[in-house]
Image (tube, rainbow, N blue to C red; front, side, top):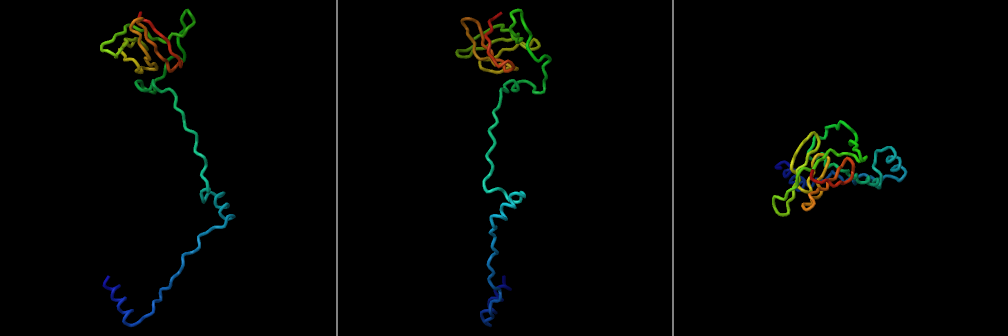
Length: 154
């Protein structure tokens, strides 16, 4: 900094002309023809970006919440009963209301897994939608079959 100030003082005192001239910045405009060539070669991006891709709509993945996603089912479809309706392998054992506005159902499903589930919660590939305490029934939605079915206490 001292050297710079010294040089400025010498220039003022000795009246030395400033030799550093002003050079304007280069013109950076490109002709339209050259710009099209650069866009086609991929050097410049296009003036308008391409439209955004359509949003991906997610499917029913409620079964992955409580189950290992790498588990593979032994059968691809449900078992058929005598009426010709697919058997989901779910049995409603009991329904209860331990507290007001909290209904629970004891279900047996899969490999004889017996558990209590709250109304509206998912388990395996199913979701317990509603429980009717008067009729002792529960409505269960299956993500595999994409439908709901009502089960009664057995």
